[in-house]
Amino acid sequence: MTHTALVTGASSGIGQAIAQRLLEHGYEVYGIGRDFSACTLTGHAQFHTVVLDLLDTPALLAFLETLPKDNLSVLVNSAGCAWYGPHETLSVEAIQTMTRVNLETPILLCGKLLRTLKQNHGTIINIASVTALETSTHGAAYGALKAGLVHFSRTLFEEHRKSGLKVSVILPDMTDTALYRNADFGPDLTEGAYLSPEDTADAVMAVLNAREGTVLSEIVLRPQYRRIHRK
Image 1: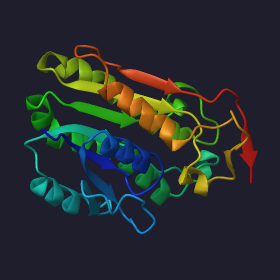
Image 2: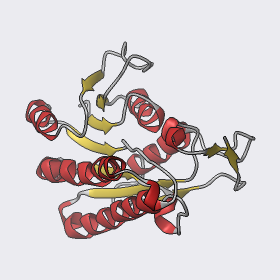
Image 3: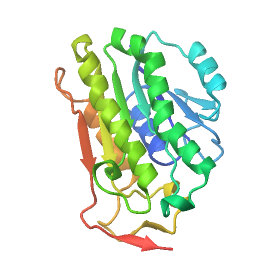
Image 4: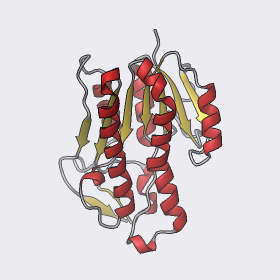
């Protein structure tokens, strides 16, 4: 039986790396993203592109009605966005967009797919951030939203673990992706000072390949060195 996975943010970065790992392990993958023009997976027979904006809730709900659910066993909430700076400098639109993409959408998707995933003894994997664990100067809103995602993941697991549902949250540190396009800093690309998207993808597979009955509920990923690059 081919297992099915739904991955948000699958058109680039961490989401694309996760989708690729799942395909390599025989999963059929439905990947949500806004623009797949630069995605390297679009030619794969078991990769289905779902072009939509996660801010368009009616379109997202309409897609979920068509998503094949018989073998759906994995939901990965990987999509994310961030704006940085002193909190008073953030626009209302930036705050609302971060809230909806980083927290509202994962909560909504979990709610809509929970019965199916419980029935299929599936796994929910939420991609958070190490900013959820510590103060995040110039990233207060982003860190708070990721902390909310961690709390939601912990509570959802406790609420449904008796059903066989697994819930994990992965907290990567600075990763070489486009997340920092709205910041005046980014990861230092010196070897050992940053994570690659594939590091998080490997952590996803560690969750899915764990011995039955074992749940890797939280995984924190950090580079060896703590450095940033000022733009």
